[in-house]
Length: 217
Image (cartoon, rainbow, N blue to C red; front, side):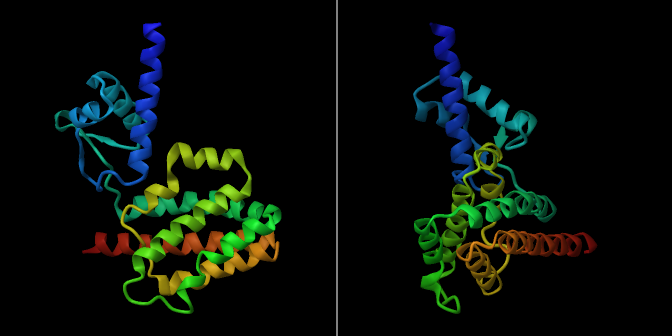
């Protein structure tokens, strides 16, 4: 029984740390304290080390030799690559969402950005960021694709892309979000797919331009 229990604990610890990582429990580049985690879970450091080594192998955290484990700190080029992956994943999700969303699903999606009016008022940036996250998460969920959601749950592509918050200002992306919503409400899968891809690839282009500018200095 002991080996089985050990395996269960290791899996649970791995899942808990991974979930916390995707939820932003550690700031970018922050050291992940193994002793603190072990105390929080009420276990030894062995399963914590196992989980952190597994996450390192998956490229989700950094292991800096003797310094320990750290939350990743992505540069603009790395973030751009995450948005490229998101464009592929979420554009298909948007198409499936448009083709299969129920009336209840559509009402929920339509309500997400209603409170922002035609412009984003000063001080509303945090609320808009949360609306942005909720919208993209819902599109994946409503798509009904287990595999697409499995990819996001496994790799946290969208969660990791929010490391530095919003890349482009709401003034640029609000209309884009509403274009996607309108296509979904109309059941127009093709337009929803293209609009979602362009929305995310526009952010990728922004990040690549920033990376080139920094490298040229």
